[in-house]
Image (cartoon, rainbow, N blue to C red; front, side, top):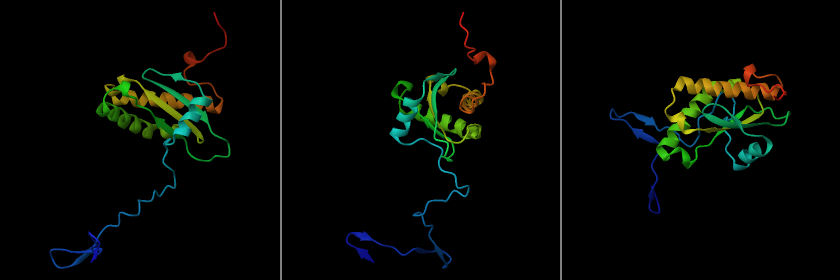
Length: 165
């Protein structure tokens, strides 16, 4: 059957043994059975809101921003990554983002619900041992969790006691 210059085919294929087998329907995306949304920040406005409502924090190989969303928002934590051109060409930036996404995926349960985090990796992340990267993301998420929940961070040396010398 034709429709203008396009050919429309039937939704079945005849196998080599003569039996018909149905084609896979790619129009419907696979449903996530857990019911959770994708834990990534996607919109520019969401990134800007995080930058505006927080301040920059630092760790050994990345800087990060975070903000608590409203209490009635029961959505899971969302994480955004940035990789600017200062980190290298596209191949290097994509590799950094892939490594960071996996480290975030492994440590996402540490974040409380209704928090947005933006991570800015440094160029050293591309050569860093993946175990160290995962540990650092875990420390960042633990610090964010502690500050959002109002308890002291796990590392007492990193806390500001409020006294200056």
